[in-house]
Length: 315
Image (cartoon, rainbow, N blue to C red):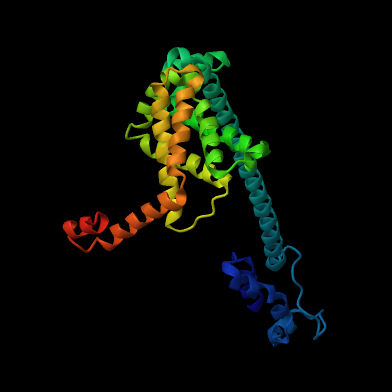
């Protein structure tokens, strides 16, 4: 009776880790003297009293098979996980490579398009001509949400990088006094626009569009900051903002003046630039006055407009 019960337990499918542990001790339970009864000894006269009952060879050992299957399952899942990780890694690497190549194609297209701006302006037509020049399908232009703006912004970024390279490579610039240094850097940057001067009003109008104005402002702010950094400015208080506001105004007014300048090699423009820098570059006076004005604004916020105006313009 006990052997029959034991065989039934052994042939039952294991369910969960607890059953697996329980089956692991079944041979010891079966070999225990508790299962040796008088009925068993009479029916098995050829067996010695202490000889353990015979377990048929066909009885499966669930402990070993469970351990093997668990081990093989673990190996299989580890191999599958490694394969999936390898697939993701290779797939991600291929995607990144494809993205880099696509961005390189976009940059080639924009670079080639600049050569057609003088004739076609800052337009989609110039971009189509640039795509054909480098052997790309014009359909790639559809990847630029703001087509003409992308071309102008690419030009602005390229000019900034060229200016940075010039700052790093030309040691004689560092020997200039601050006012001359500022004038020189602004002139170098504006000279990069000279070949496109007839089409630059169109570029300015593109930059002024609502969807593009934030990027335009950021690019100009980076330009002004780079110029001040090259001069060695280390201001960290309100002077930092005042200096950049002053230089931003000088740059913009000179840029607009350049559009109407018909003098040879923009000589009048550079004279205008030098005068504006000299007028504003007495920073001890210009910055201090602007600083006083800003402090007056802060002090007058809680007062009436009339009282504030009296503070700013006494007398």
